[in-house]
Image (cartoon, rainbow, N blue to C red; front, side):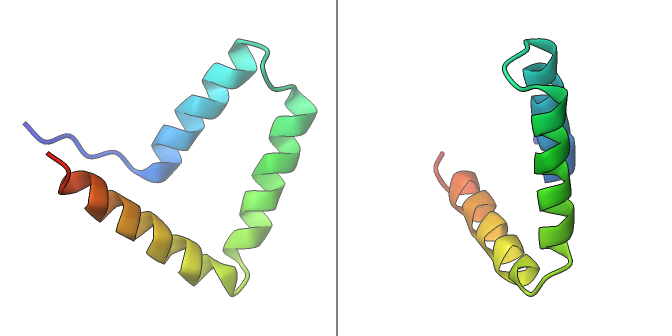
Length: 63
């Protein structure tokens, strides 16, 4: 069975776990969220998507 998750869901769960475990404070999480939000609207977004796509393809072909 193949399970697919979006990067937003995975990163959201990771953020929740880090906040709950008190490894990251709420202010730090807000700063990281805003950084990601503003990065998505720049020209770097296409490069970041391409890197994520390449990493996803590479992990799919490992096994």
